[in-house]
Every structure is written in structure tokens, then in C-alpha cells.
Length: 354
Image 1 (cartoon, rainbow, N blue to C red):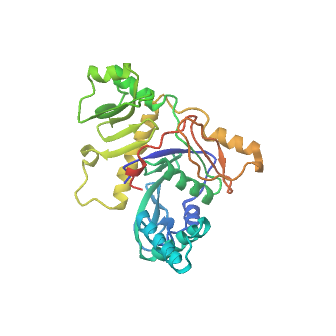
Image 2: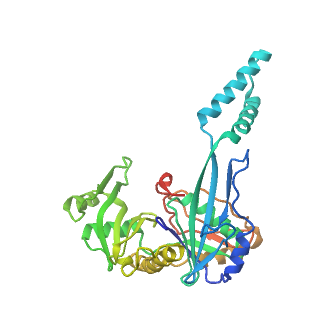
Image 3: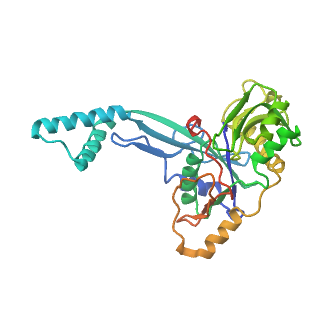
């Protein structure tokens, strides 16, 4: 649970009960793909119990689970079926299908093949901490996080969130920690990092299972290579990989976390209590290590949307380039999705569990 994290800040004015969240999610439950349906998404019971609640509270922490199912239809298989249909038309009529007809043949071939296609499923844990006003998604893909957050904002009236933003960029902080060999209080630098050049060559140097307190690493930083990933451990309890986009990846709870627990103490409630109990302390310490939270974010976005009134269009999931700002986006339900001044890079989306 929570092997990767993208963290959002929830606006303070959003106050709801768990029952209201449950009622909202019940309007969009997950259902498996139909015979000719390419993709299906929705909410499933976090405990895995059939017909169980879609929103669970463990120690005051709210846990949701989002599910996606898609049909696997290889492009080569589809192309072969389209070619067969086109050849049949040419044999029967003596003419080759035109551009418009070829598109229709492709749609027809897809409908033919979808009922026979395999399906794949992926799920994402969603954690809402109403006390700390945090929304945490278990994914390393910013695009996938955007999709789920936008659906939440549309479903939950008044929900306004912004990507967590800090005074010091993770990249600048990581470069300082490596160059000066001064990790922040409560953290230690582990044996893995990635350094990337900012010039056109985009040269990359990776260290794995290698000490980083060496002159070679400092020389790379002096030469203009900046950290994009750095392995850290917090309080000898949680190890993780921090990225330049403030994503927290490869989260691993160390043995000290489980001291005093029995081998048979597992289960949903225990897993949630352990994970959220550690992470709810790690996140503010990481924010402090990065110079504290930057001003603006949700508050300024809500104000901007309010002043714009109904003239601002409802949001859609947008692709966000690393060098552009992420403007406030208003939902039909009155919520807002916004981001930091510098939009985080979507790191390694294909390796995400969701």
C-alpha cells in the first residue's frame, strides 16, 4: 500500500462527512468492460469485500480505491483485420477503400475484435487526511493522478486541491545535500541517485548501490548535472526515492516500523494504520526539509476562480508541460484543481502500478 505518492493539498474550506463521500462515489462504481467496451473505470470497495463501502475510515484516515480495466488489442492484430477487410472489398468491387471508408473499416474491425480481447486491470489507492488536509495518490504517473483528481473534484462538491509546492525545489535541495554532504535533519542519503545534464546532450549518470559521499558526485554537480532522483531514508523508518517533481517513489517501511507487531497482525486496518501513521509524519518533515510550503496554491486558485465567476470553463484533464505553469481549473461542482508554479515532470509513467 502506497509504494508511490503524488501529494496534493486540500483547501481548508472543504468540510464533508465520510457518508457524503460514500454517496458521491456510489454514483460511479467500477463495472467490468462490456463486450465492445474498450475501457471502464470507477470506484471499488477498498477492503475488497463485495458490496462493501467505497470509502473506509481507519483511525480517522479515509481510504478509497480507484479501478481501471482496459481491453488489450495489439495494433498489429487490428491492422491485420483491417487489411483483410480492405482486400475483400477490393476483390469484390475492384477498387481500394478510400480514406473515409478505411477509417470505418478500422472501427468495424475493432468492434469485431474487442469481444475476444484480453483485459487488464489496475487500481490506485487514494488517501484523504482531513486533519492535515492532504490528498495522496498511490501512483508515479502525473497523468493518471490528474485523471483521478479531476474525477474526485467533479464528484465531491467544493473540493479544491493543489499539487504540493515547496519554497525550495526538490532538485535544488537534492543538489545541495549531495554537494555539501549535508542531508536535512531527520533524513539520511542512501546509495542511489540520478544526475542529468541541463544542456542539449541531456547526459545522464546513475548510481545504484553506490556511496554518494564521493568527489565524483560533487564534480558532476559542479559540471552542471542536477539530481532528478535521490534515495533517502526518514528517521530510520521509511526509505523512498524523491524526484525532481516532488514525487515520492519506491516507498519502503523498515523493520523498526513493525517492532512490537506480530506476524499475524496483517490485514487492511493494520496496513492502513501503519502506512498512514508513518507517512503523515514523513510528509511534513519532507516539506520542512524543502524550505516549507510555498504560499499560494489552493487559496489563490480558489480566489482566482471566484473572481472569474461562471466565465471560466469547466476543467478537463490536460497534459502539462514541465516548463509551463498549471493554472487554476474550476469544475462544474465548484471545485478547483491547480498546481505549483513549476509543474512537476511526469516521471517514468510506464512503471507505475496504476
